[in-house]
Image (tube, rainbow, N blue to C red; front, side):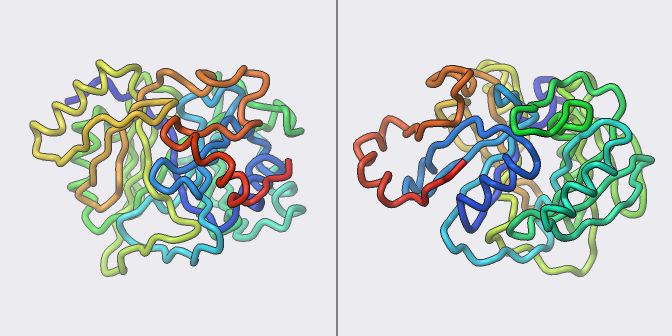
Length: 310
């Protein structure tokens, strides 16, 4: 069993427009844009990162906004709901705030004894806010959401699969422990994690597989402290029979990827070097940062990329 993983690092999704995506996460959810860069493999598409002040692992939602991308089709083999943690007693504030902003899909429920508020992102993305006690993480308040109700970071993610047993076995191998089961969903948690340390696996029979598009989660990333820990995880996964990519330099972290039995794309990302490696903390996410191999395209990309007005 692995001991190096301490929770989520980031969640990456697809969108249909950069401006609408940026406005939703900064002006509605109150997160900070901590990096404005481009997709390594498609540099004419942004890669936008939102999180707390520093983009701390476990707080970062990232997006590839492909202009006018077709909507995704929800189904099996994907992360269906990305869940943020908010303080106890704050769902009323958020229900009012999201309703005033015209956010769709607002619905309350209780799952595993926790009150949560479901809502949809600009492209139909599945989100929820969960009330938690004593979350020590410091929220970003620079976009106007008061500290006593602001998002602390991720709480969890919920995967939707046809065979929950195989996915559960993988998560146990990755260091997660089962804490509860309810209505076809198993909850797992990594001990002594980073706050974003919970994963729910929902087993659904007879449904179609998801079709990725705007509003779909592209991959979910798990956090390890450094490159040495990442190499240990990679070797263990390879020894277990998983097909794992070589280590890839993503400028702000190193990444490895593999496909789970349920079809979800997993990444294991390092906490180093962080989003302040090329920008001062006070100005994170303001300028367009380009990977070295794409710097020669700056003039062209500046013309092509959709302007983002903060």
